[in-house]
Image (cartoon, rainbow, N blue to C red; front, side, top):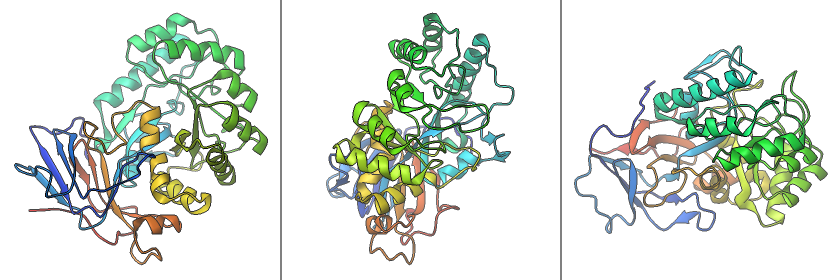
Length: 397
């Protein structure tokens, strides 16, 4: 496992050619009419037909062999602790394992599994700043982990949020995992966070572990966080009428997680589809958790929501890429000039009943990954976790 903390070490030019299906991550146009991408110094500079893009001077050429390419997948909800180790399941290299499932970016919903996590205000601020610094300086296998997400506690004042923002903290951990569990207090603190550019998420549903509590629709609506964390429960879901209420009356991000209630996930998706707001749907794993780490969790959600939620596979991929990137103000997640060159090269798994990548996913099969790229650098080749892909991208020359 590599611990790269940067993009290319010198001037670089990556050319990817022979792309069969190019997924954009953009709900407006989820499939691009292009078969080549050029990235220079870690950023996309051209997308088009091979004959029309400037491939001269490439330092690395990838032959996609007619397989598919997606933006790197984004896990909108995870709980990192220290580097690539989680005490929740006493597991090493879980982030590297998720990279083998196509996840190139992770968003912390709070470093809540940290042994001895401080609940006092001085301590929780210090831990958040430390986590933000740690994961900025240390990227397991190149994965971008946006961490340093403090859990709000009673007694915090506006100055605390101003101080956190000035120190580089950009996220709040799940509202409701600390002592603040009422809508009125949460709303005030969320507003302070928003004033200073800190994005917020709320725990939704029944308690996740002993010591946490129920957060119902009334509290979620009152708190008005930017993202409704695990709208399908983490694990225990709210009643359908409350999920519908959140979909119809909130307007914030609808985060569906792997470690939640699958039936509720499909209900939330159908409701978002009914009201014409699929752009609000984003995906997370909520791992590590009691049910462990799911290296293929995001891919599994894409396949499940496509197969059982009756959305085209290319749309389901947007939930795991561009939707999250836009909601979270990230520079990745979309195949657009200027964006970070974070890619997953993938195809239908061998012997799938589907005739191609998209059909296989819509039938519920997990695609095979042959390569991941972060900041224009090849990070993994054949995935150790997915089924083998029908076609295997290769570094040419």
